[in-house]
Length: 106
Image (cartoon, rainbow, N blue to C red):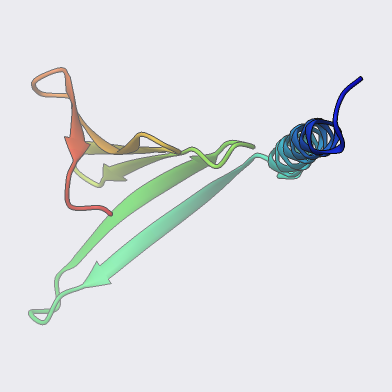
């Protein structure tokens, strides 16, 4: 026969496991409930000398919170940025064909 302390310990461990599983399923359900979307935008900058520059930006946001931004300047120069949950921010160098982690973003 098991003592009362042993039974109490088994009960507490079982309740903790059930609570952990419930919290994980709620967290997963909330993450899946966020809709993915895409934002298109144009930016026109007016400089003090009166000149103007423009760029187009497309931002993709996934259901899990990861984002990708692609900025295209009027001269065709493309800048690309990524953010991945748990991994951080990244910058794409198309000239060098490399992906760099952006250490300046917290």
